[in-house]
Length: 135
Image (cartoon, one colour):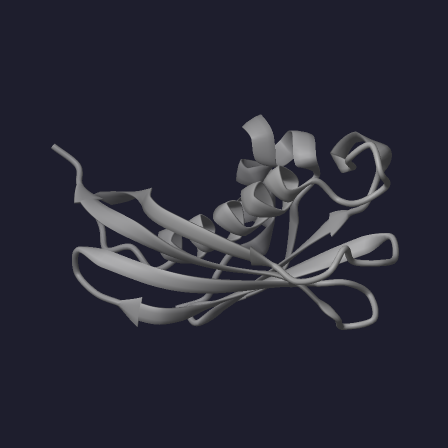
C-alpha cells in the first residue's frame, strides 16, 4: 500500500498543524517523516523552539503515522504522550521521524525523533494512539 503525501499535506494544512507549517516529506507504513521551519512564531523569549511546538509537531506526525495504518471505518485519538527534550536545536529546519513500537488492533505506539539540521536529537516523543471504530 502506498501513502499519498500530497493528500496528507493538504489535510495537515488545516488547524494547528497548518499554523505550525508542518509538511510531510517521506511516508511508508512504518516510517513517516515531516519537516518544520524554525521561525519566530514558534520560539520562546530566549530564542529556543518552544517545547509545546515540539510536542505538537511530534503529536501530529505520530497521529498521521497511525492514520495511514488504520483499517477501514476507524479513526484515532492520542491516548498518551511523553516527550523528553535533549537540545535546543540549531538551524532553520527541524525534522521529525516517527516509527512504530507497536501496531495493534486497539492501540498503536509511535516513537518520534525530532532532529535539527546537524542531525542532533532535539526531542524524543513516545505516544500511544487509540484506534476507535466509527459508529
